[in-house]
Length: 154
Image (cartoon, rainbow, N blue to C red):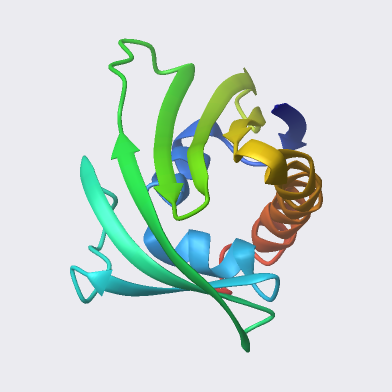
């Protein structure tokens, strides 16, 4: 099942992109619905690099939700007006968690941010999809809060 959620961010594409590349941005925008604790490696890098990051997840900071592998891919983009980042992640019971982030310049001071997610989890797919739908709307709300506070939350 797929999800596609778009929003306008009132920041320039360069700033949005720089913050997409920060693991601390993920930690902030996922809070408090999900919290990620790095397992392997035992810490997040300063910036996302191509590779696999195994994490422990907790729902609302207290309910263990198992491990999740974040698998970062960075498709090449020769454009300063269009940027992509992919998390081709997976976890036990979820065979596919493909998350593509696209940022496209609208004006010098705004860009369109898109979360496109594809999920496969056998019989659990509709339930995981519903959770993801809520979660990705939350993420975009938190992005706007982060920008409104001039990224001081990081």
